[in-house]
Image (cartoon, rainbow, N blue to C red; front, side, top):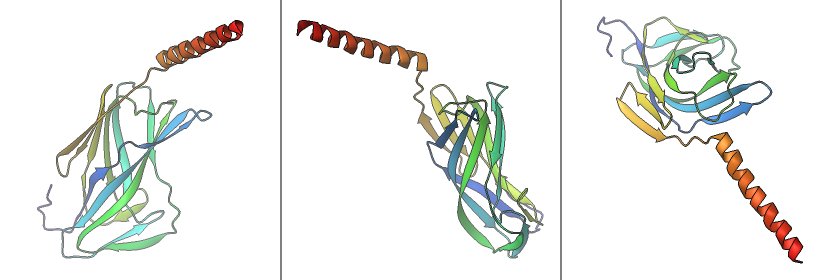
Length: 193
């Protein structure tokens, strides 16, 4: 995407993201937190230094839009920053950053992302502000029963990962069968003595 108006502007793009996400399941809170480390690029393609202000972070803020198969699932995005109010500037050129993207999924306790589509982008809102337009280049995640696909708008690159989902009921039956078999063998062994 290009800005043809000749005005100052910024581009914030997602270059890459780790897989698998780090997962924290809270049984007491009934939620799962998925934390994905992302590689961002902030480009100032103009010849001007762009100034900004922040109230909690001088970094781009993450945003998320979902279209999940289970419409009752509630998802939120969040970051933890502890910065004072201040200002920052972005020089002409390209700067790479690493950012943690955290998704909290409420009333959901599973190590796999819920089935559906995720649209992720970063811009200068909520915690920091710039006075110029910001063009965002997004990342898309498509989650099916068998695959997770990462699609990067900037490079049109696609990464496909195979998902191995385990059915807890089947795993319980298999574990129970092996435990029962071992108990029977142990009892038979003791009877022979």
